[in-house]
Image 1 (cartoon, rainbow, N blue to C red):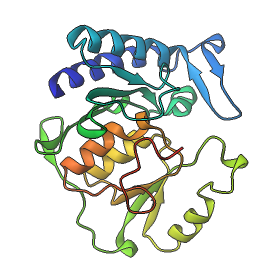
Image 2 (image 1 turned 30 degrees about the vertical axis):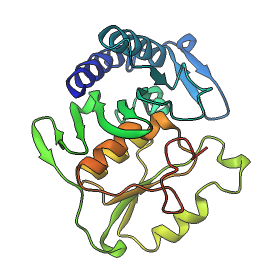
Image 3 (image 1 turned 180 degrees about the vertical axis):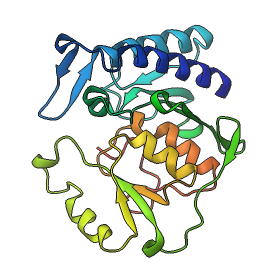
Length: 239
C-alpha cells in the first residue's frame, strides 16, 4: 500500500508542477473569502482517485474535492487524500504545497505519504514500519521543553467568523517557544514534525485530508498526536 501511495503521490506532484506558475485566472475558483480551488487540485485528485481505485477497487477514496459530505471515518480500510494542500501558496507561486495520501483502517492511520513536488521531498511510512524522507530514515525531535522548541501553526479560512480562531493560542505560544513557523500547508507541517525539522505543530478546524497522512508519519516516527483535549478525536472531530 505504501509503495502504491508513493508512486501515485509523485505522479500527482508531476501534474501539479505542470500547472505551477502557469494557471490562468479562469482556472482559479473562489470558494470563500480566503478559500480557493484550482484546476490543478481537480486534475490531481482525479488522477489519484483513478489510480488508487484501479489498483485497489475494494478501498474507498475520501478526497478534499470530492468528499466534503463525509463526517465520520468509514469502517474498514480507506484512503484519505488531499491532492493539493497549500492551494493558496500554489496560486501565489510559493513552493510550499504538497500531495497528501493517508491509508487508514477503522479510522486508525496505518501509512502516509506527503510529497512536496517543488522541493523534491517525499516523506513516507507509518506505525510499525518507520518513516523515511526518500531513502533516509527520520524521527521526531527530542527537544524537551517549549522554550527550546520551534513549532508551527495555521489558521482556518473562516477565522474572522469564530472566536475559536487560534489567535489567542498564537499569542501565548509565541512568548513561550523559540520560534513559530507558518507554512500554509498542514501536511508539510506534520511531515516536518515527523522528520524532526519542527518540534511540534498545532492547528484548529482541520479536515481529515489535512492530517491523515501526516499523523501516520508522526506516529511512525515516534511522535504523539492528540486532539485539543488530549484525546483521539482528531480525524473527523476538528471542524
